[in-house]
Image 1 (cartoon, rainbow, N blue to C red):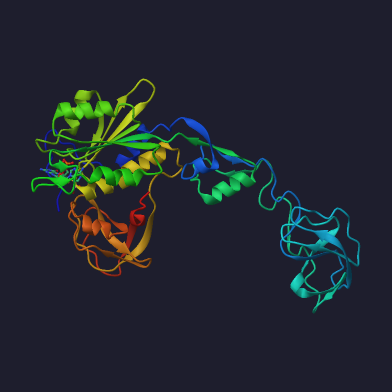
Image 2: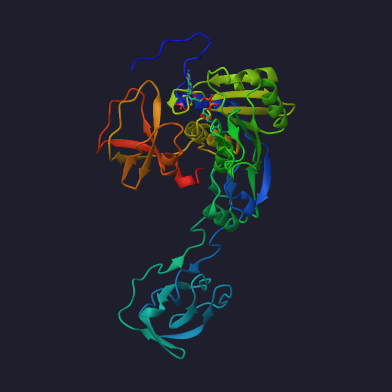
Length: 413
Ligand SMILES: Nc1nc2c(c(=O)[nH]1)N[C@H]1C(S)=C(S)[C@@H](COP(=O)(O)OP(=O)(O)OC[C@H]3O[C@@H](n4cnc5c(N)ncnc54)[C@H](O)[C@@H]3O)O[C@H]1N2
Ligand code: MOO
């Protein structure tokens, strides 16, 4: 398919990466705060984290058994005491002596290693080998500083904080973590045809579903989302809605982004005092996306105008809204990850826009959904990936390598 002819007043659509770069250039990280571990989940480290202690802080036993001295692996031994986790043995061990060890217990001074209890026979305080002597060195010992030493940077700035990162931060001596404040997001549904109540929706209306969908997408990334609308297709009504959202860090609209007589987001934003950064991107679905900013006293507000078709809203939410929120939160890698897989089925040739095709991925192959209309929600809800198709690609068939973006079956972030 050839490039469409240029139309006065309608900008050429930007490639996805260029549009994302322009959006990130607007996204100054949010102010910093320190939060406890529960509050840190799902956020990003605002600075590299250095260990405040060494772990293990001393040599520890890695198994349950008996500690013996160097060169004394044949036995027999006399048990002279115990080192349990949290209750160290304070004496030293001499040849011919053994100390009962539990996993995680401090290794006594002069102990060379630990022999597993399964390899030993114990009768009262007498201990002997069940079979042959074990290998000599360093057996079943976790050396001091094996994991990290005081001062070592254990996690880089911008790392996503999840369960493993919380465990490491606590182990490294931290009770709180530096993170960016989560942004407040206002989500505006717009369109005269939108019905709030899906059980009372006459034929000329459609239930408003994008706002709730977008709110579900950003759960966890925003401190709060505020829903506004549905707002009628009138400039004054849209300006009122923007005013209600004037305290938000990010404003997201859906609908009214295209070129129709009732697509008023752009003129309403201009009249409100926002400046358009870019409009239209070369992806399908999602072409009419717009990005604008408005200067507030302390910070710049970012406005994302998503196309109204539900699948277009989701796809642009996935490639722009979520990455924007991650960038504001200080993520090192705000963009979604794609993975390589194999196509099972056929896909038609693409046109001048890069396409994101709904599909079902089983871990090995991906099957495209038969219905790809940008208003079709059944195929969206049955999909777990978006298949990435380059612009001007020839038709594709079973066995071809493709790349997919994971939608995580609804838990989309
Ligand atoms: N002549 C042209 N027409 C269109 C073009 C174009 O380039 N030239 N672009 C098309 C593309 S691509 C898209 S995508 C749509 C999106 O346009 P809008 O952002 O202006 O969306 P609306 O027209 O307001 O709505 C489209 C569709 O989505 C439904 N919708 C809107 N909001 C919601 C909501 N909150 N919940 C559920 N559904 C919603 C709306 O009822 C419409 O059916 O424009 C093409 N047109
Ligand atoms: O880009 Mo529209 O989003 O094709 O349906």
